[in-house]
Amino acid sequence: QVQLLESGGGLVQAGGSLRLSCAASGRTFSSYAMGWFRQAPGREREFVASISRRSINTDYAHSVKGRFTISRDNAKNTVYLQMNSLRPEDTAVYYCARGIYAYDYPGGRESSYTDWGQGTQVTVSS
Image (cartoon, rainbow, N blue to C red; front, side, top):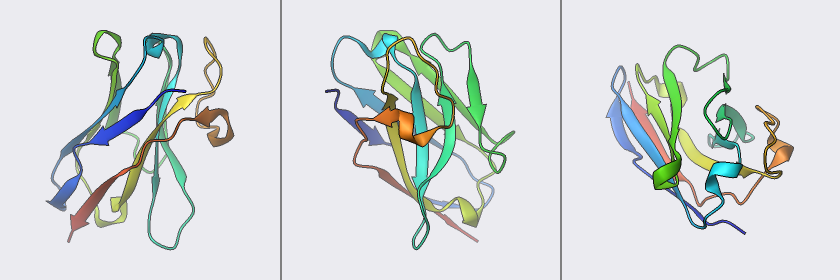
């Protein structure tokens, strides 16, 4: 099992930026796809972005495409989510997760992710 620890959340005004980080334990980070998801109050958790193990493939939810960028540094066992042009509707707890199967790229399929972090709160004020 891999432990994931998100950081970088906070309070920002609309139009601002934040960079989330997700640090993973273990030595197999580079074998797995990683994903970012979010859950707003009263809503179900939803897909935000995903990245394949060597950063060849990335996918984004339609609502964040062009504003958010997912990246990873396998040497640091860390995946990032750069969030620009933030909107109040981006307010949520953001979670990172690891793909279940090594060498697989599940894209936005939430059921194919595991080892969820504890989440980091992002609040965007209008």
